[in-house]
Image 1 (cartoon, rainbow, N blue to C red):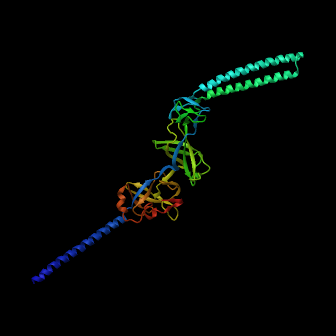
Image 2: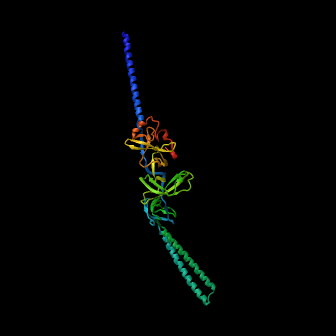
Image 3: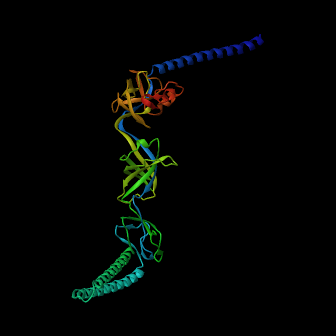
Length: 403
Protein backbone atom coordinates (compact mmCIF):
# COMPACT_ATOMS: atom_id res chain seq x y z
CA UNK A 1 0.00 0.00 0.00
CA UNK A 2 2.75 2.35 0.93
CA UNK A 3 4.54 1.55 -2.29
CA UNK A 4 1.36 2.31 -4.23
CA UNK A 5 1.11 5.72 -2.59
CA UNK A 6 4.72 6.47 -3.50
CA UNK A 7 3.82 5.91 -7.14
CA UNK A 8 0.39 7.56 -7.16
CA UNK A 9 1.31 10.87 -5.57
CA UNK A 10 4.10 11.78 -8.07
CA UNK A 11 1.85 10.73 -10.94
CA UNK A 12 -0.93 13.04 -9.71
CA UNK A 13 1.53 15.92 -9.34
CA UNK A 14 2.88 15.36 -12.85
CA UNK A 15 -0.62 15.17 -14.32
CA UNK A 16 -1.55 18.40 -12.53
CA UNK A 17 1.51 20.16 -13.98
CA UNK A 18 0.73 18.91 -17.48
CA UNK A 19 -2.87 20.06 -17.20
CA UNK A 20 -1.75 23.48 -15.90
CA UNK A 21 0.70 23.83 -18.76
CA UNK A 22 -1.97 22.94 -21.32
CA UNK A 23 -4.29 25.55 -19.86
CA UNK A 24 -1.49 28.17 -19.93
CA UNK A 25 -0.68 27.39 -23.56
CA UNK A 26 -4.32 27.70 -24.57
CA UNK A 27 -4.62 31.00 -22.75
CA UNK A 28 -1.41 32.29 -24.39
CA UNK A 29 -2.60 31.18 -27.83
CA UNK A 30 -5.92 32.88 -27.25
CA UNK A 31 -4.15 36.09 -26.18
CA UNK A 32 -1.85 35.97 -29.25
CA UNK A 33 -4.82 35.37 -31.53
CA UNK A 34 -6.58 38.31 -29.93
CA UNK A 35 -3.53 40.52 -30.37
CA UNK A 36 -3.11 39.38 -33.98
CA UNK A 37 -6.73 40.17 -34.68
CA UNK A 38 -6.28 43.58 -33.06
CA UNK A 39 -3.24 44.29 -35.19
CA UNK A 40 -5.12 43.10 -38.24
CA UNK A 41 -7.99 45.44 -37.52
CA UNK A 42 -5.72 48.37 -36.51
CA UNK A 43 -4.98 51.08 -39.10
CA UNK A 44 -1.68 50.43 -40.93
CA UNK A 45 1.33 52.44 -39.80
CA UNK A 46 2.82 54.57 -42.57
CA UNK A 47 5.54 57.15 -42.98
CA UNK A 48 4.74 60.18 -45.14
CA UNK A 49 6.63 62.99 -46.85
CA UNK A 50 5.37 66.30 -48.25
CA UNK A 51 5.10 67.23 -51.91
CA UNK A 52 7.67 70.02 -52.31
CA UNK A 53 8.11 72.62 -55.02
CA UNK A 54 11.73 73.00 -56.09
CA UNK A 55 14.08 73.05 -59.06
CA UNK A 56 15.42 69.80 -60.44
CA UNK A 57 18.99 70.44 -61.50
CA UNK A 58 21.07 68.26 -63.81
CA UNK A 59 24.77 69.00 -63.76
CA UNK A 60 28.11 67.70 -64.94
CA UNK A 61 30.98 67.92 -62.50
CA UNK A 62 34.66 67.65 -63.37
CA UNK A 63 38.11 68.47 -62.07
CA UNK A 64 38.84 72.16 -62.64
CA UNK A 65 42.06 73.82 -63.69
CA UNK A 66 42.45 77.61 -63.68
CA UNK A 67 44.19 79.34 -66.57
CA UNK A 68 44.84 82.96 -67.38
CA UNK A 69 43.18 84.14 -70.60
CA UNK A 70 46.38 85.98 -71.50
CA UNK A 71 49.93 85.03 -70.54
CA UNK A 72 52.71 87.29 -71.83
CA UNK A 73 56.45 86.56 -71.78
CA UNK A 74 58.30 89.87 -71.61
CA UNK A 75 61.64 89.68 -73.45
CA UNK A 76 64.02 92.22 -75.01
CA UNK A 77 64.46 92.69 -78.73
CA UNK A 78 68.20 93.22 -78.34
CA UNK A 79 70.94 91.58 -76.29
CA UNK A 80 72.13 93.49 -73.26
CA UNK A 81 72.90 93.53 -69.57
CA UNK A 82 69.94 93.76 -67.21
CA UNK A 83 70.47 96.75 -64.90
CA UNK A 84 66.96 97.24 -63.47
CA UNK A 85 64.37 94.67 -62.41
CA UNK A 86 62.30 94.99 -59.23
CA UNK A 87 59.11 93.05 -59.96
CA UNK A 88 58.90 89.62 -58.37
CA UNK A 89 56.32 86.83 -58.70
CA UNK A 90 53.02 88.01 -57.27
CA UNK A 91 53.68 91.68 -57.99
CA UNK A 92 50.91 93.58 -59.74
CA UNK A 93 51.86 95.54 -62.87
CA UNK A 94 49.91 97.93 -65.07
CA UNK A 95 49.87 98.32 -68.83
CA UNK A 96 52.74 100.56 -70.00
CA UNK A 97 54.67 100.34 -66.73
CA UNK A 98 58.48 100.05 -67.08
CA UNK A 99 59.37 96.84 -65.29
CA UNK A 100 62.89 96.16 -66.60
CA UNK A 101 65.77 98.07 -68.20
CA UNK A 102 68.89 96.99 -70.09
CA UNK A 103 72.26 98.80 -70.03
CA UNK A 104 72.08 101.55 -72.70
CA UNK A 105 75.79 102.53 -72.76
CA UNK A 106 76.71 100.43 -75.81
CA UNK A 107 73.81 101.64 -77.89
CA UNK A 108 74.33 105.23 -76.74
CA UNK A 109 77.91 105.02 -78.03
CA UNK A 110 76.65 103.65 -81.32
CA UNK A 111 74.12 106.47 -81.52
CA UNK A 112 76.83 109.07 -80.98
CA UNK A 113 78.94 107.46 -83.70
CA UNK A 114 75.99 107.31 -86.06
CA UNK A 115 75.11 110.94 -85.41
CA UNK A 116 78.63 111.82 -86.55
CA UNK A 117 78.08 109.71 -89.66
CA UNK A 118 74.83 111.56 -90.37
CA UNK A 119 76.58 114.91 -89.96
CA UNK A 120 79.34 113.80 -92.36
CA UNK A 121 76.82 112.52 -94.90
CA UNK A 122 74.90 115.81 -94.69
CA UNK A 123 78.11 117.77 -95.32
CA UNK A 124 78.96 115.62 -98.33
CA UNK A 125 75.46 116.15 -99.71
CA UNK A 126 75.72 119.92 -99.20
CA UNK A 127 79.03 120.03 -101.08
CA UNK A 128 77.59 117.90 -103.87
CA UNK A 129 74.60 120.22 -104.21
CA UNK A 130 76.88 123.31 -104.39
CA UNK A 131 79.07 121.60 -106.96
CA UNK A 132 76.06 120.58 -109.03
CA UNK A 133 74.72 124.14 -109.04
CA UNK A 134 78.13 125.51 -110.13
CA UNK A 135 78.47 122.98 -112.97
CA UNK A 136 74.92 123.63 -114.10
CA UNK A 137 75.61 127.39 -114.17
CA UNK A 138 78.73 126.84 -116.29
CA UNK A 139 76.80 124.52 -118.57
CA UNK A 140 74.20 127.24 -119.23
CA UNK A 141 77.08 129.57 -120.15
CA UNK A 142 78.48 126.92 -122.51
CA UNK A 143 81.71 126.30 -120.62
CA UNK A 144 81.09 122.61 -119.74
CA UNK A 145 79.47 119.70 -121.44
CA UNK A 146 76.10 118.18 -120.55
CA UNK A 147 77.92 115.05 -119.32
CA UNK A 148 79.52 117.06 -116.55
CA UNK A 149 76.06 118.17 -115.38
CA UNK A 150 74.84 114.56 -115.36
CA UNK A 151 77.88 113.44 -113.39
CA UNK A 152 77.36 116.22 -110.82
CA UNK A 153 73.65 115.28 -110.49
CA UNK A 154 74.49 111.58 -110.02
CA UNK A 155 77.04 112.44 -107.36
CA UNK A 156 74.42 114.50 -105.55
CA UNK A 157 71.95 111.56 -105.53
CA UNK A 158 74.65 109.22 -104.24
CA UNK A 159 75.35 111.49 -101.28
CA UNK A 160 71.64 111.95 -100.70
CA UNK A 161 71.20 108.18 -100.52
CA UNK A 162 74.14 107.92 -98.13
CA UNK A 163 72.53 110.54 -95.89
CA UNK A 164 69.18 108.71 -95.93
CA UNK A 165 70.91 105.43 -95.05
CA UNK A 166 72.85 107.05 -92.20
CA UNK A 167 69.70 108.72 -90.90
CA UNK A 168 67.77 105.45 -91.04
CA UNK A 169 70.54 103.71 -89.13
CA UNK A 170 70.45 106.47 -86.50
CA UNK A 171 66.69 106.06 -86.11
CA UNK A 172 67.14 102.32 -85.80
CA UNK A 173 69.64 102.79 -83.01
CA UNK A 174 67.32 105.26 -81.29
CA UNK A 175 64.50 102.74 -81.49
CA UNK A 176 66.82 100.12 -80.02
CA UNK A 177 67.49 102.51 -77.16
CA UNK A 178 63.75 102.60 -76.51
CA UNK A 179 63.67 98.81 -76.71
CA UNK A 180 65.97 98.69 -73.69
CA UNK A 181 62.99 99.82 -71.61
CA UNK A 182 60.71 96.80 -71.14
CA UNK A 183 57.09 97.72 -70.43
CA UNK A 184 54.18 95.53 -69.42
CA UNK A 185 51.74 95.18 -72.33
CA UNK A 186 48.85 94.22 -70.02
CA UNK A 187 47.43 94.75 -66.57
CA UNK A 188 48.19 91.68 -64.53
CA UNK A 189 50.45 89.89 -62.10
CA UNK A 190 54.01 88.64 -62.44
CA UNK A 191 53.95 84.85 -62.28
CA UNK A 192 57.57 84.07 -63.22
CA UNK A 193 60.96 85.83 -63.04
CA UNK A 194 63.84 84.21 -64.90
CA UNK A 195 66.73 86.71 -64.44
CA UNK A 196 68.19 89.04 -61.84
CA UNK A 197 69.90 92.42 -62.37
CA UNK A 198 73.42 91.99 -63.73
CA UNK A 199 72.50 89.10 -66.02
CA UNK A 200 73.17 89.33 -69.75
CA UNK A 201 69.94 88.63 -71.58
CA UNK A 202 69.79 87.64 -75.22
CA UNK A 203 67.18 88.94 -77.61
CA UNK A 204 63.98 86.91 -77.24
CA UNK A 205 64.77 85.47 -73.79
CA UNK A 206 61.84 85.86 -71.39
CA UNK A 207 62.74 87.95 -68.36
CA UNK A 208 59.27 87.99 -66.77
CA UNK A 209 55.92 86.30 -67.31
CA UNK A 210 52.81 88.40 -66.72
CA UNK A 211 49.30 86.96 -66.65
CA UNK A 212 45.98 88.79 -66.71
CA UNK A 213 43.46 87.85 -64.01
CA UNK A 214 40.51 90.20 -64.38
CA UNK A 215 38.80 87.21 -65.96
CA UNK A 216 40.04 83.63 -65.74
CA UNK A 217 39.39 80.44 -67.67
CA UNK A 218 38.38 77.35 -65.70
CA UNK A 219 38.72 74.20 -67.77
CA UNK A 220 37.77 70.58 -67.36
CA UNK A 221 37.39 67.47 -69.51
CA UNK A 222 34.01 65.91 -70.35
CA UNK A 223 33.47 62.36 -71.66
CA UNK A 224 32.17 61.98 -75.16
CA UNK A 225 28.80 60.56 -74.07
CA UNK A 226 28.00 63.82 -72.23
CA UNK A 227 29.47 66.37 -74.60
CA UNK A 228 26.18 66.71 -76.49
CA UNK A 229 24.53 68.12 -73.36
CA UNK A 230 27.15 70.84 -72.76
CA UNK A 231 26.98 74.02 -74.81
CA UNK A 232 28.45 77.50 -74.70
CA UNK A 233 26.36 79.86 -72.61
CA UNK A 234 25.41 77.34 -69.92
CA UNK A 235 25.76 78.39 -66.31
CA UNK A 236 28.78 77.06 -64.44
CA UNK A 237 29.93 77.00 -60.83
CA UNK A 238 33.44 76.52 -59.51
CA UNK A 239 34.88 75.80 -56.09
CA UNK A 240 38.54 75.51 -55.17
CA UNK A 241 40.45 73.65 -52.49
CA UNK A 242 42.38 76.82 -51.66
CA UNK A 243 39.13 78.77 -51.11
CA UNK A 244 36.94 76.49 -48.96
CA UNK A 245 33.31 77.41 -48.60
CA UNK A 246 33.23 79.76 -51.59
CA UNK A 247 31.38 79.15 -54.85
CA UNK A 248 32.04 81.24 -57.98
CA UNK A 249 29.62 81.66 -60.88
CA UNK A 250 30.47 81.88 -64.57
CA UNK A 251 29.46 80.72 -68.05
CA UNK A 252 30.67 78.08 -70.48
CA UNK A 253 32.43 79.94 -73.28
CA UNK A 254 34.04 77.18 -75.34
CA UNK A 255 33.69 73.47 -76.02
CA UNK A 256 36.41 71.88 -78.12
CA UNK A 257 34.96 70.40 -81.32
CA UNK A 258 37.44 67.50 -81.26
CA UNK A 259 38.27 65.06 -78.48
CA UNK A 260 41.74 64.43 -77.12
CA UNK A 261 43.10 61.46 -79.10
CA UNK A 262 44.46 59.80 -75.96
CA UNK A 263 41.76 60.35 -73.31
CA UNK A 264 38.84 60.62 -75.76
CA UNK A 265 37.52 63.51 -73.71
CA UNK A 266 36.55 67.03 -74.76
CA UNK A 267 37.99 70.18 -73.24
CA UNK A 268 35.31 72.46 -71.78
CA UNK A 269 36.16 76.05 -70.86
CA UNK A 270 34.15 78.39 -68.62
CA UNK A 271 34.91 82.06 -68.00
CA UNK A 272 34.67 83.60 -64.53
CA UNK A 273 34.87 87.25 -63.50
CA UNK A 274 37.76 87.77 -61.11
CA UNK A 275 37.70 91.47 -60.28
CA UNK A 276 39.16 90.90 -56.80
CA UNK A 277 41.93 88.63 -58.19
CA UNK A 278 40.79 85.90 -55.81
CA UNK A 279 41.12 83.04 -58.29
CA UNK A 280 44.71 82.39 -59.31
CA UNK A 281 46.02 80.43 -62.31
CA UNK A 282 47.02 76.90 -61.37
CA UNK A 283 44.39 76.50 -58.63
CA UNK A 284 42.79 73.06 -58.29
CA UNK A 285 39.09 72.53 -57.72
CA UNK A 286 35.76 71.40 -59.14
CA UNK A 287 33.81 72.78 -62.09
CA UNK A 288 30.06 72.15 -62.15
CA UNK A 289 28.12 72.83 -65.35
CA UNK A 290 24.34 73.12 -65.08
CA UNK A 291 23.21 71.21 -68.16
CA UNK A 292 19.45 71.36 -67.52
CA UNK A 293 17.12 72.82 -64.89
CA UNK A 294 13.40 72.09 -64.45
CA UNK A 295 12.08 75.06 -62.52
CA UNK A 296 9.33 74.96 -59.87
CA UNK A 297 8.68 71.22 -60.18
CA UNK A 298 6.41 69.37 -57.72
CA UNK A 299 8.70 66.67 -56.38
CA UNK A 300 8.05 63.57 -54.30
CA UNK A 301 10.58 61.01 -53.01
CA UNK A 302 11.24 58.11 -55.33
CA UNK A 303 9.78 55.74 -52.70
CA UNK A 304 6.36 57.34 -53.13
CA UNK A 305 5.97 56.17 -56.75
CA UNK A 306 4.25 52.80 -57.24
CA UNK A 307 3.45 50.84 -60.37
CA UNK A 308 -0.09 49.80 -61.18
CA UNK A 309 -1.71 48.25 -64.24
CA UNK A 310 -2.95 51.72 -65.19
CA UNK A 311 0.33 53.55 -64.64
CA UNK A 312 2.20 55.21 -61.80
CA UNK A 313 0.36 56.12 -58.59
CA UNK A 314 1.03 57.74 -55.25
CA UNK A 315 -0.88 57.35 -52.00
CA UNK A 316 -2.01 60.65 -50.48
CA UNK A 317 -2.83 60.98 -46.79
CA UNK A 318 -4.82 63.72 -45.08
CA UNK A 319 -3.39 63.96 -41.53
CA UNK A 320 -5.77 64.11 -38.57
CA UNK A 321 -3.47 63.91 -35.58
CA UNK A 322 -1.67 60.57 -35.78
CA UNK A 323 -4.29 59.15 -38.11
CA UNK A 324 -5.24 59.94 -41.68
CA UNK A 325 -7.24 58.63 -44.60
CA UNK A 326 -5.32 57.24 -47.55
CA UNK A 327 -6.18 57.91 -51.17
CA UNK A 328 -4.41 56.24 -54.10
CA UNK A 329 -4.27 58.63 -57.05
CA UNK A 330 -2.81 58.20 -60.54
CA UNK A 331 -0.04 60.62 -61.45
CA UNK A 332 2.10 61.65 -64.38
CA UNK A 333 5.84 61.70 -63.79
CA UNK A 334 8.35 64.11 -65.30
CA UNK A 335 11.95 65.03 -64.70
CA UNK A 336 13.93 63.42 -61.89
CA UNK A 337 17.17 63.62 -59.98
CA UNK A 338 18.86 61.56 -57.29
CA UNK A 339 16.52 62.88 -54.58
CA UNK A 340 13.10 62.77 -56.15
CA UNK A 341 10.71 62.59 -59.08
CA UNK A 342 8.71 65.46 -60.54
CA UNK A 343 4.93 64.97 -60.68
CA UNK A 344 3.32 66.89 -63.51
CA UNK A 345 -0.26 65.89 -62.73
CA UNK A 346 -2.08 64.44 -59.72
CA UNK A 347 -0.69 66.21 -56.62
CA UNK A 348 -0.57 69.67 -55.10
CA UNK A 349 2.20 71.41 -53.11
CA UNK A 350 2.17 70.53 -49.41
CA UNK A 351 0.17 67.30 -49.75
CA UNK A 352 1.51 64.27 -47.91
CA UNK A 353 2.43 61.07 -49.78
CA UNK A 354 3.19 57.65 -48.32
CA UNK A 355 6.83 56.63 -48.68
CA UNK A 356 6.88 53.61 -46.32
CA UNK A 357 4.17 51.34 -44.91
CA UNK A 358 4.12 48.30 -42.60
CA UNK A 359 1.18 46.81 -44.59
CA UNK A 360 -0.34 47.36 -48.01
CA UNK A 361 -2.48 50.49 -48.01
CA UNK A 362 -5.75 50.71 -49.93
CA UNK A 363 -7.59 53.79 -51.09
CA UNK A 364 -10.00 55.08 -48.44
CA UNK A 365 -8.30 53.19 -45.63
CA UNK A 366 -7.55 54.82 -42.26
CA UNK A 367 -3.81 54.84 -41.52
CA UNK A 368 -1.57 55.95 -38.69
CA UNK A 369 1.24 58.38 -39.55
CA UNK A 370 4.63 57.51 -38.07
CA UNK A 371 7.10 60.27 -37.32
CA UNK A 372 10.30 58.28 -36.74
CA UNK A 373 11.49 54.95 -35.39
CA UNK A 374 8.04 53.66 -34.50
CA UNK A 375 7.87 51.50 -37.63
CA UNK A 376 11.00 49.48 -36.90
CA UNK A 377 9.20 46.74 -34.95
CA UNK A 378 6.19 46.68 -37.25
CA UNK A 379 8.38 46.26 -40.34
CA UNK A 380 10.25 43.26 -38.89
CA UNK A 381 9.20 40.16 -40.78
CA UNK A 382 6.73 42.01 -43.03
CA UNK A 383 7.08 40.98 -46.70
CA UNK A 384 4.64 43.58 -48.06
CA UNK A 385 6.07 47.09 -48.17
CA UNK A 386 4.78 50.29 -49.75
CA UNK A 387 7.20 51.53 -52.47
CA UNK A 388 10.95 51.71 -51.95
CA UNK A 389 11.51 48.83 -49.49
CA UNK A 390 11.53 45.13 -50.31
CA UNK A 391 10.93 43.58 -53.70
CA UNK A 392 8.41 46.12 -54.96
CA UNK A 393 10.68 49.05 -54.23
CA UNK A 394 13.39 47.79 -56.58
CA UNK A 395 11.15 47.68 -59.64
CA UNK A 396 11.51 50.34 -62.30
CA UNK A 397 9.07 53.20 -61.90
CA UNK A 398 6.98 54.40 -64.85
CA UNK A 399 8.47 56.65 -67.43
CA UNK A 400 12.00 55.28 -67.05
CA UNK A 401 12.19 56.12 -63.35
CA UNK A 402 14.10 53.53 -61.36
CA UNK A 403 13.96 53.41 -57.59
